[in-house]
Image (cartoon, rainbow, N blue to C red; front, side, top):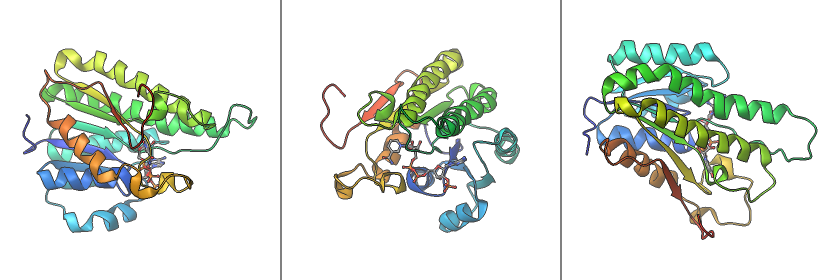
Length: 237
Ligand SMILES: NC(=O)c1ccc[n+]([C@@H]2O[C@H](COP(=O)([O-])OP(=O)(O)OC[C@H]3O[C@@H](n4cnc5c(N)ncnc54)[C@H](OP(=O)(O)O)[C@@H]3O)[C@@H](O)[C@H]2O)c1
């Protein structure tokens, strides 16, 4: 297993939900972090107890290429290296096949797909240099099958699966390993709309964070391309 000490991991959307749980778990294990969030004040408030010794905080809006550029540049300047990128930030808008307004499709393409794509592109030179760079894309079981009317969200997460495999291909020879982490329901703000499944039975963000930590620590010759996480039984998934 790879040691956390001295390894620098970027986490997007680290101010709440799964991203915050990932940041907390990685910090506790000794990683050095670079956290990105739309609202730096909210990020600071959510992570103040972690201090700043192994923590760099940056403004990052997935819709804004310049903010991604500044975040990656700032991380490299602050720590001199980037060993991992956790693409967590995303939105889940409710849009179905027959809806004529396409704005939600466009927003999810930009934030859920182009956001991670841009960060991968920007971080890849650093990840390659690390020799054991890691990319963890928080995808979804909605990137593996379609079982509700949220067509736009599922389409964006299927695209994240393709992005993950494209990143694996691009970085493999230089030791970069990419993983798509695919949970079902997770007990965060994103599942507030779910009323027919108990929150305590959903996957907890802290448990997903442990899986992220495991993926980051596995050696180059034990790479996981897709990690499917169930909180309830599904045929074949
Ligand atoms: N919850 C689930 O059941 C579930 C299941 C499968 C996969 N996932 C995936 O897990 C990841 C995290 O979800 P979550 O459940 O933690 O959701 P969440 O609680 O709604 O948090 C979403 C995070 O993404 C950030 N974000 C949204 N738009 C952004 C933008 N334009 N630029 C930068 N950051 C942005 C949010 O920042 P703000 O606070 O500023 O809005 C927040 O930090 C997502 O990729 C989601 O698709 C979640």
